[in-house]
Image (tube, rainbow, N blue to C red; front, side):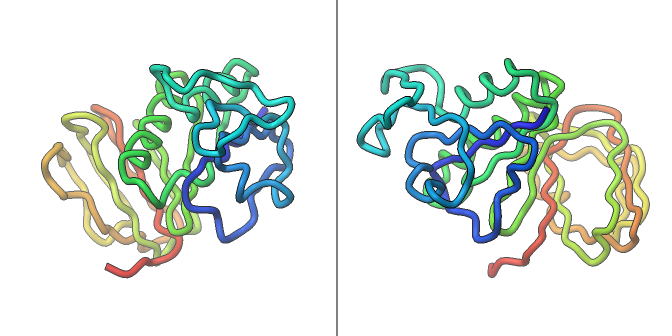
Length: 202
């Protein structure tokens, strides 16, 4: 079973894949998603939307978890083995940072959790990580926590062999996939993986 979370960030420019998925819309995401995306449940504290829609699962505004965490827990409780997040980027960077933690939270519970912004697909991974069909695309890696060690790599412009990525360093940013089947092996720690679909302006 697959789950989809809709968040109150930058609306996706493209379609949201809801096929065979249970879709939870969080709070203010209803503004961009209603009438455009199939929604199975609306949930949150609704401090952004300003009102609680009829039939919504409502939580208090003053709580120790975000609406995204609520949705993640609900979907994992339903047995979802994969969760895709849309609307997690743009706007407030503190929310973006929090939404990245959802990816690691899903990873820790054995659920492949990915966030899709308008430019990038982001997820957490460890062990052998393989990329197919991404030749020519930018790929960035960052450690979750203090460090992550990469034993070897294949098919990347900048080889990553016996390399420790550390917090406080930008090493791992802006590599390039050069083959149709690239891979790395991360034997210690966990990585944030950023697959850049569309190059932004910097």
